[in-house]
Length: 372
Ligand code: FES
Ligand SMILES: [Fe+2]
Image (cartoon, rainbow, N blue to C red):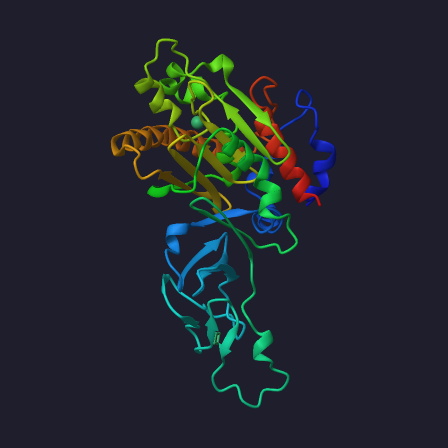
């Protein structure tokens, strides 16, 4: 089989008006998902936890990133650390779940590690040649924080968090938004029967709004809807249609989490950061969407909302309820699209120049990353 990466150079045209969409096999070929894990998910900054998961010194939190077990700790000084949650002995889990500990004992044979990752003790290992406990610490991962959010990068050689996020952080701050004291309000997980890219593609265009989201379409100034692309992220702008909309009306839409979000006067910022993160930023709250492949044709989307402590609970509830409605409409269409992509009748389509520049941008980044 000709690998998708080999064929992609001549197939992916950099000019939107000439380009064809990526081959449909990319949405169900196991080799593509393997490459995506290696070249995208394990090489980019990934949102994996929140500060409240490690609320005080001497705490730990475990999670997974598309199959890689991870361990986050806050040591006795309060300093955050990130590691692979893999014991250096025979790969047991150094920690399970989350909690408070002074040190971590592997659940298999009981080696003990400090919260800074060093190996404190390895029982009954006397007489082992060339075994230096000091050089047998946990393997670290890069870690960074922004407000309530904790990111890791599994690639030690990857560009720093600041290098990747500084244009966004700078813009967010310059518009007067402050994430520093925001706290988590709610999390909703959605298990969707499609490849993760189907969901991301859908997020990156407003073209489907009139058809898939007729209720939302009523409220948006569709003609003004715009996606602006940058090197490794894009930004969406979608103002509210009704000139007479009251602040209460506009607020609901301004707070909607997702690509179709509306803002009365650019008060909100909507970012997609390659490959799988959406950040929706408002004066008193933010929401995050993380899109993760759990299987080839199965995706977990994690939606989380954070707000300043004084934010209105009723308004946040309206925001989350509205998001739920839009999300169900998107799930319906994405699951059908996955079936269509798998059909022997379909391989590649075309992009609307007016409406699908964001999707084309994503596909180019994908193509570049996978063919390296
Ligand atoms: S695998 Fe951890 S102590 Fe053996
Ligand atoms: Fe949608």
